[in-house]
Image 1 (cartoon, rainbow, N blue to C red):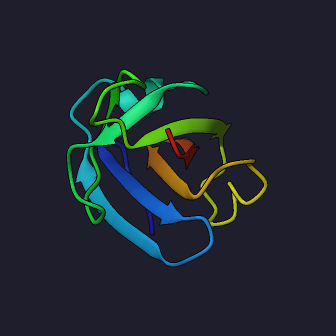
Image 2 (image 1 turned 90 degrees about the horizontal axis):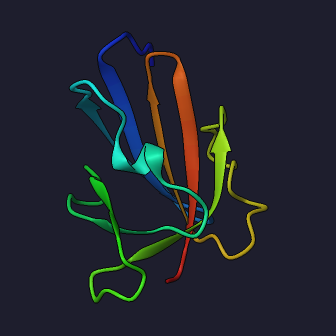
Length: 106
């Protein structure tokens, strides 16, 4: 897939299973997922097919994932295979920038 300027690809992947994917238009600044760091907790306000990850407090009832690793520059399906505790991979690619979040249990 060719990515140009304002197009962003976002995906949630099961580390051991199949790909659930979506594409969305980026409207300017970085996403909350991009600004997330190891130890942050996230909730998905979208769907598995069209994820919209938002930061949340790790003690909140809506916390679904904890970032166990963040890998800059790698969005391959196996990027999170060696991340301890990861069961889901989320990635974004746009404007030459790409990263994966390796997500585990809260």
